[in-house]
Image (cartoon, rainbow, N blue to C red; front, side):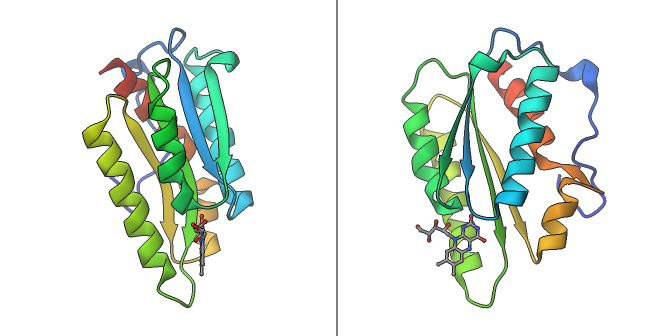
Length: 158
Ligand code: RBF
């Protein structure tokens, strides 16, 4: 669920499996680095909080959110990963690019989930402005990166 009131870092810790034997791939977009860096911090911190060891968290960057599809697809070829997380931030501008990029990434990641054997967790912030992105990357609504880490652990266990 993603509503304005949903706090992204609140979850039931008891419901989260132990991640100490799990291996994760994380693909991060370089656009809006202040936001995606904060998403990555939240993701790594939360994976480690639940037992993941740093050597088992493999991070790659891609130029922009559209490239998250290719980055994630390449990671699905690695049998060693239990889950993959994509992290990006698309902020609405004055051209229709926002809609095209958001739809493209959403469709691309959905396709990977339906066609590959590794869950790909969707950590794409799609916001109308920078403040909304800050609110969801460690601000007043928590950190989408925390949520993605929890979802990745749960889906790895699934
Ligand atoms: N990538 C992002 O991750 N976030 C953005 O907000 C974003 N805005 C873009 C706006 C325009 C007008 C263009 C042309 C690209 C934008 N991109 C953005 C980059 C896009 O995801 C991709 O890296 C490039 O289009 C190259 O394939």
